[in-house]
Image: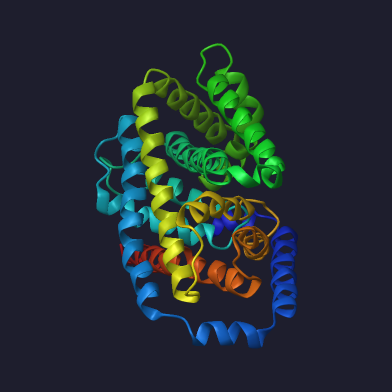
Length: 344
């Protein structure tokens, strides 16, 4: 978020989640052994790492394009791919130091405060675009796991029964919530229950009177939901688009794994279970999933024969390629934009 928004986040909470991240990483380093990590890194194949880095800008552009489409269908088609990509990077920058990547809402803030009036989007609608963008990510990850496990782990379904059960429950909840959200009868009630706390927090970020701002944002968010009620074909298209994005992202992670070990697991098996580690990053107990993601990766990758050392390095390296490098670029953009505003 902005500096004002970040100050509103409890310092105690940030301190606590930082400690959890450090504790988890320290435990994993102790459990795995720093010597083992150095050995794997020293034998890594830089060619595959280079390929993973080359792929990243294209994946980012496609993600930004998906968000641009969502914003355009809200009635604001003037957002260009270049601006959308830069704002997407700022979201990664904000999300890199907040629990559950809540800092991604920095995208909404900057879009709502853009100096170009033809690009500027009302705050509530900007927030809705981020929420919908993230919902498609979660639904796509669940789909990959639910479809992949029965197809590619037929002989091991007993081992995955709990994963399947959790996945089915999550999918059912998300689908049910989506239907309720976009229904005329229950849509506003769902927003009242689930979205109001977030919208109140966001209302404090936008520098107007708290009550008026929250009310406006709520109305704009509700209007956005109404706008998409009749865009079912578009929503299905974005869902399929999101699936393609995440399959490509899993392929990128497979390239990182290829750099770390010569004997690779079946690529379809890898793509099926890799999303599970991404869910761990959404648990709001660490900074941007740091620690929980690595612990989950160590456990999950053991299912397909990847040892703990390689899984740990895979998680850190993939985060470096797909999150931290883009986040640094986003931070540079935010800094330059702030300096330009000071000079105006």
